[in-house]
Amino acid sequence: MTPIGIVTVSDRASQGDYRDEGGPAIAAWLSRVLVSPWRPESRLVPDDQPRVEAALRALADDDGCALIVTTGGTGPAPRDVTPEATAAVCEKMLPGFGELMRRESLNAVPTAILSRQTAGIRGRSLIVNLPGKPAAIDVCLRAIMPAIPYCIDLIGGGRLETDPAMCVAFRPR
Image 1 (cartoon, one colour):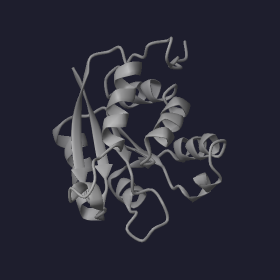
Image 2 (cartoon, rainbow, N blue to C red):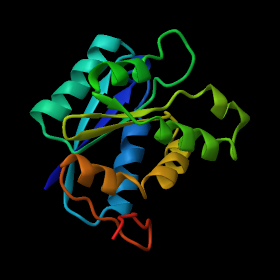
Image 3 (cartoon, rainbow, N blue to C red):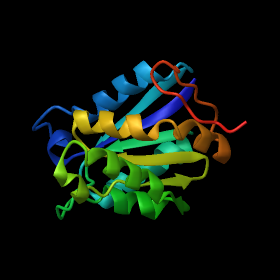
Image 4 (cartoon, rainbow, N blue to C red):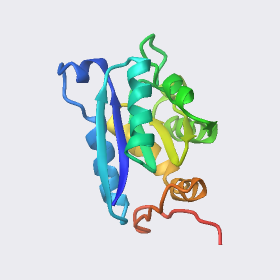
């Protein structure tokens, strides 16, 4: 069973001020789309770069997650540090993921240009930053999921299969 990391980055949710909706939205989305066996490795951390970095490192290095998806902390506010934490732990950055997510999100809201989502590779793990709102998570995952399984194949992170009725994963022949 492939572990998939789900990291919610939020000061208020980590303090119990409100319920995390982003992490459960990611897990529900992946449950609908993935047909290969997987299990969530969930973390809830505050908007603190060292704590976000530690969670990403642990999920990649210790838990062996082929895919790590974050939610929250991608805006322009001073405490939004998820992209910086991601860049700090990755060997290679994949800016195309963020470009596509912003392009698709602009169809829904003009403030999508404020989002700083990105993606990168740490060892055999693909780390992808998503926004914090469940509706935006859906838009972004629909846009990028066709490329995720092949990316994970290329970095040796295991094989993820999608339900073609929900998402056709692209793999060159």
